[in-house]
Image (cartoon, rainbow, N blue to C red; front, side, top):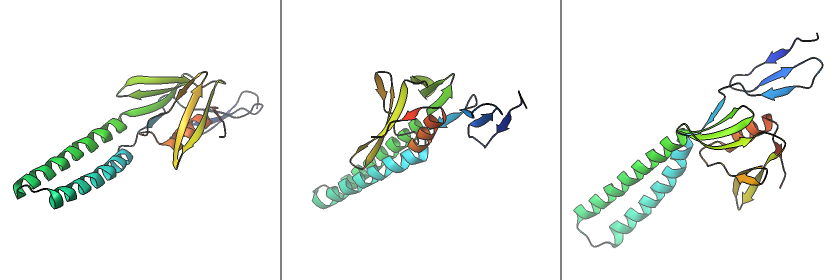
Length: 170
């Protein structure tokens, strides 16, 4: 049994390497990526934008004393602006990526690395509550980092846990 290992895999999950005489260790395969969700960003930004446009349009149609054609033009311009903004946010969210590589958690946007955090004993994380909002805070040494909302917080927490990062209860 000495040098033989069991390799247990689940699709898109870390592999669990088990040596008969050792504790199990978790490691992500090279190229394992956690991508941002374009649909979640579109739902969030789109819902807020739609409500804002609806309120503004109602106010325009009820209180403005402008000709009908001006009201229609302003309403269509607002809808166009909201559509372009929501599309841009969705595309930006899709290009937001977190990956584990060489013992570091690397965040990137459009292929450009924005932050790199070592996954060692000096790194920990906690979930801070601000009212009803839950915010993930990753601390390494003396620096803190709050990932943007494009990445799924639960998946990112699981990624941190699976790579040995300790959660500090708050």
